[in-house]
Length: 420
Image (tube, rainbow, N blue to C red):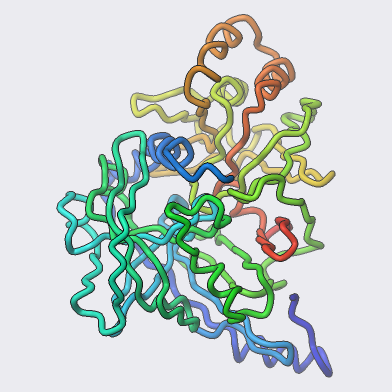
C-alpha cells in the first residue's frame, strides 16, 4: 500500500514527517586487512547457504488513515553487510541480524555455544527471559564447512514495534568455520518462503501475516549506498515507502516458492543481449555480490579487465571504472541496468568486481564448465550454454542498492524500481 493523502497533499507531508524515524548508521571499526578481504568469504558463505541441506519442499514507521507500517532501520557495513536489530526475550536481549530473503529461519548464538564465533557475538540467555518457552527440537543446517547446530526455543521476538509472542527460533551451539566468526552480525533473520524453513519453524514474517499485525502481507527493502556514513537503509513490514524509489514498480511473479526467485528473461552487457531462454534469479538481500555461473562471471570480469588477486577477488584499476560497459538484467520485460560505478566496489581505494562465479556442485556443473570456457570466448555463446544447464543468478546488494525491492507474499511477486 503506497502512502497517499486522505484530504490534501499537505496533510500527507505532515504525516510523513511526523512518523518517519531515521536511525544513524552503526559505523563498524575494522582493520585494513579486514577491509581488503571483506568479500573473500562470500563464496564459502553462499555455498553454505544455497547448497547445504534444506527441506525437500520447495518502532512505528508510518501511520495514516489506512493503517500502520512497521520499519526496522538497517546498518550498512561499508556496503558489504546490511543488518538491523531484533529483540528476543523479556527483558529484551538485542541482537544484530541480517534480514535475509535467501533463507527462512531466525537464529542467534546461544550461551550454550562453544564455537569461537559465538564468543565474538551477543548470545541469547534463556535463563534471563521471563517469556522463554522450552522446545528443545534439534536444529541443524548442513553447510559446506560443517554444520550450524543448535536447538529450537520459543520466546517473544520484537521487530520495530511488532511483538511476536512464542516465536520459534534457533539457538546455535555450534557455528562452523570462520565465516560467522568474522561477521559483523550476530545471527540471521530469514525472510524467504516457509517452504525452505528448517524444521518447518514458522518464520517471523509469516507470524506477522497470520496474526494480522501488518496491513498487507508484504515487506519492502531500501538499501542506502552510504559507504560508512549515513543511513544504511530500511526494511518496512506491511507497506511500501514511495519516498525511496522513482517511477513505477515493475512486478515479476515468483516462479518457485522457496527463495524469492523470479524469472530472468535476458541479460544485456555492453549493449548486447544474450538472447537467453528464461531462467531463475534469486533476489537475495543477504548476499553482498551478484553471483553468476563461474564461466559467465569469469568472462564478464575478463571483458571489464578485472584480474583475480591472491584472495580470489577480481580487482580492476579504479581509473577504468567510469568507462566500463553497462550491465543489465531483464525482468518482466524491463531492463534494470547498472553502470561500472554500481557493480564495482571501491574498498580502501582498491576496486573489486561485484560479479563472482559459483557453480552448482558436481556432477551438474564443473564437468563441462572448464572444457567449454577454453573453447568459447564470446559473451553470447557462454551465456547460452550456461543457461542451457539452468544455472541461476543470485542477485545481491550490488543490484539492490540501485533498485528498491518489494516482496509481496499475498500475490507471490517481487516489485523493483530505481531507488532514490
